Length: 141
Image (cartoon, rainbow, N blue to C red; front, side, top):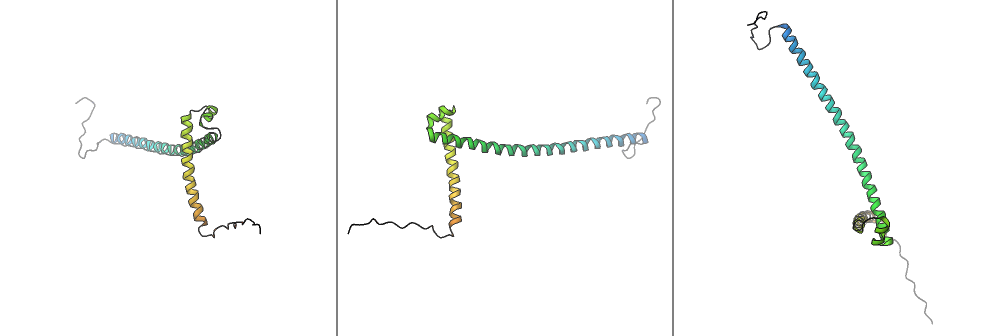
């Protein structure tokens, strides 16, 4: 042993000296505070990520609606001017326009089927609409 140090014996696994125990408690307190700070920062980060995901989802939906509007407008130009002319006018490849027209047509037919189904449900309890009577051409007598 070196001079100036006294030997400490352990009986229960705890340090015997009060100053040693106090240093251990201070280190444990610091460790606990550091862990709590990490947990708080992680919770803050999770909240920020959740808000970011919400904003991204909102804007993705807006972008999808806008892209759908572009496709519908392109399809209208194709119906008006034809595929090749529309491609020249819009500076878009005919292939891309054809794809836009197909996607618009499939979306419209799906929406039409939903609309038709809703309309059929809405009118199923109503009497049928009146029809005009056929006219009979006058005859010479």
